[in-house]
Structure formats: structure tokens, C-alpha cells
Length: 202
Image (tube, rainbow, N blue to C red; front, top):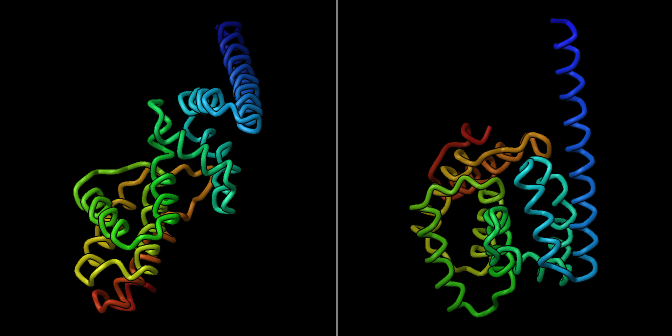
């Protein structure tokens, strides 16, 4: 019995080590192909990691997230192509792509149309993707900065985003307090509109 137990531990350790080696190798391919401009191969590698472990994918994808925040054109093109692909992990990337589209849209009429589409999604769809509440909140502030939303629309957006954030899955490996921070930001918006008390923020 003891020998069987020892064998199972050894087997489990070997499997874990192999998985780690596998992920490191695929991660290298994802990064290498991205820098070479082979986006499809890079997407396929990232998707393999996502299918193995969404948490690990989340950590390894952070450089891309930082790159798009810094307005790196290559990373933005990559995100756009990734979001349009049919792989499973594209669902993780689509909120980022939507935010980038809004950020780069100058025409107010186009922004109004996009605001209506996104508002319908926020109000009616059960979106539980990890980055959704974060990037849709970013879109909300882009709309506010461009003076697109009416007072009624702001209310719909904020309450919809609060529900979305509550339902969002959270990967503890990266941001333990992300959901709490988004709740704070959105509740503060409600307070500024006179829709909640300061005690809620505290």
C-alpha cells in the first residue's frame, strides 16, 4: 500500500513538472511568434495555454495588456485579430478589443451607436468573463469623457456593470482586490448621481 502511495505521488509530481515544462515551451512560442508578427501561430499557442489553465493564461497575457495600455500598435493589432478568431480564449480578449475600438473612435455619432449596443449587452447578457467588468467600466468612462450618455443611461450602465462585476470569475493569482475596486468606482459614480449614500462607499 505504501509503495502504491509513493508511486502515485511520484507520478503526480512528474505530471506537474511536464505540464509546467509544456506551458513554458508554449508560452515561449506564443511570445516569439507575436514579436515575429505570426499572429495566428501566437494566438494558437495562447489558446493552448488557456485550455490547460485559464489562470496561467491570465498571468502570461499580462505583457500584452500592458502593451495595449501603452498604445503599442502591434499589440493593438494583435488583440483585434485575436478577438475576431474562433478560439475559446477569444472570449477573454473581446472586452479588451471593444475598449480599444471605443478608445480610438472619434466620431460622436458612431460612439452613440456603439454605446447603445454595449448598453444592451450590459443590461441583458450574463457576461462572466474575467476582464469584462474592468474593460466595460473603462468604456463607461470613455463615454462619460465624450459626453455620450444621458443621466438615465448612466444609471443603466452603472447598475448593469455592478451586476456584471458581481458575476465575474476572479483569478486570485493576479488581482485579489480587483472586483472590490471596481465596486468602489461604480458605487462612487452612483453617489455622484445622488443614487446612493456615502456609507455605501465607505
